[in-house]
Length: 214
Image (cartoon, rainbow, N blue to C red):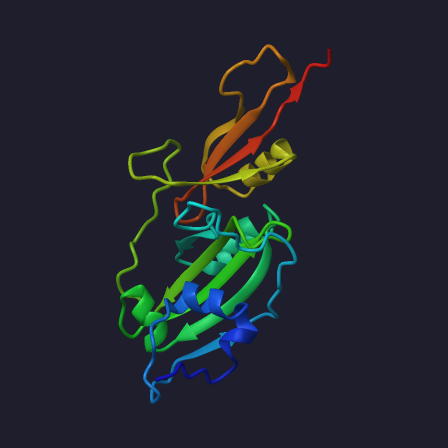
């Protein structure tokens, strides 16, 4: 049994075993299967932060969070164009291999992974299912947090400019930049803001403060 790839090899797409494990879960595909992956952009290979398994740990640090979205191009307007994340790869998957890892049948997948800088950890996957008839009709766009929400948390050094761009783009603001508590030892307070992306996912931007000089 083997994975048939009509366009390119898994090695060329993602550093071999790591990509195979992340996308196909090491599930073998029958030889006659028409599984394929089509790169939509040239893959960027990070130069730092290799996957490291620390002693006593069952897993390595989180490689990425992945969200399944209604429209990748709409999501990229936020995560790539405003927040400035850099595409690592953008692939189109089809066949039984990708359906096996997703627990689906007959669906195709566009998978984009974004990174901040040059890192294999802490990245963001934006995936869109095609031929999916179960897409929720609307996304939660409330200006508050609810039980069951999850949030993507990004440190930043430019929270006020980003907040202005996010607000101008029309994303629902849960909170403008605010300090969680007032710290007397800080000259400039640490602040956070939160908003919802096009699919209702909470995004939390965090900016460190500046301590008073002695």
